[in-house]
Length: 341
Image 1 (cartoon, rainbow, N blue to C red):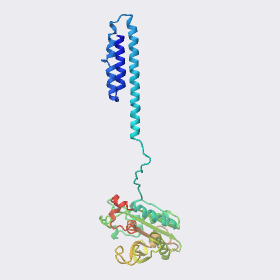
Image 2: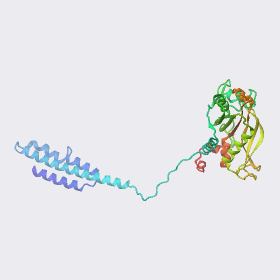
Image 3: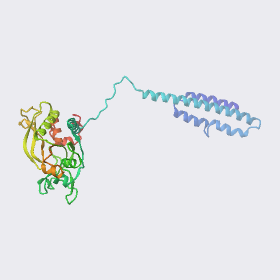
């Protein structure tokens, strides 16, 4: 039996030495040391030995088993080491290879325009104020000198939140004029950018959701000259130092006198082109002196104080600044369009 054990050991060590992979090694382990393995069968036959032979053969059998298990673990460790090295080689980074260029995001053209305009007015000493997008009819209309029978209050233009018409999605950022005059100490110098809502069909120049920026200055001895000077500086800062402005008479319920401001076409320099429809001018904003009735509603004495206000559509500015022909492009999130900015 001792000779049989020697044969099993020599055969096992040789086969372990010749094993090619981890799967074969596991199969060989079961064959050698499993319940039906040769060594196990020898150990089961020890019951037929004499009392004198049993401890000697048992000890020798354990030594043979230990040698086979040690060799098996050594071969297993060697395979694991090789597998690890193969994995490291496969995952090795070649630092001489050029890196993969990552796509980096950037500001949306609307965000860029809003931030540019904010910085212009902040540089002129204006404060930024914000207010609710769900407004009361009082702040959106009545306090701004827009009576209940005014066409702008027609349900075709306004999104009302309740049936009574007390609450609505603001149609302009002008309510911030009233809210600011009610809560701020004089003098006042503010801009109020934000989203506004009107019941418009979506097309190349209209959207039910868009952005406006309202500006207002209230102080003693404010004149139309101050308004024109401030907006001329704004136009040159936004469109370039060669930009010229002109003012045309207009009507707004909350300003008197009122005007619309045009800026010389940035595409042709005022010579006339497709962008400005050959006029040389592009309409930019509405403005005027704050109506005395609006001042009175905010408990500001129009005999002592005066002020000017202006409002501009930010989508229109973005479209003019970047020569965008269709408003919908700003909101469709087409990366082919956005990557141009």
